[in-house]
Length: 83
Figure 1: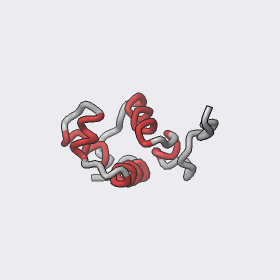
Figure 2: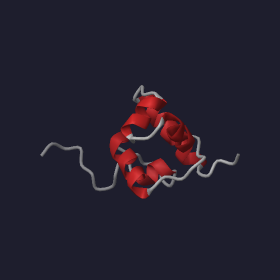
Figure 3: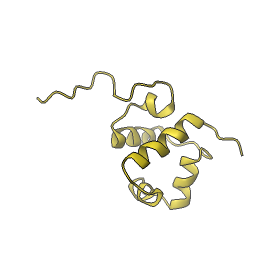
Figure 4: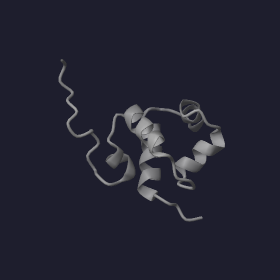
C-alpha cells in the first residue's frame, strides 16, 4: 500500500516516540481505537484538519512541520518568553 503522506507518517511516529508514548496511548488521546491510530501513523488514511491541529498542539509543533512542509518545529509567532 502506498503511504499517502510519508513525511507526516515519519514525523508523527518520531514525535510520539520522543514523548515515550505508545500507539494505544495516542489512540486514547484522539478518542479512537488502536488500529485506527495505526492507520493514521502508517499513512493509510487521511485525518480531519481539526485532528491535525490537535496533534500539532499536543506535540507543540506547527501543522506545517507535522505535514512535512517545513523543517521549523515551532509555530510561527509563538513566543516561549514568559508573560
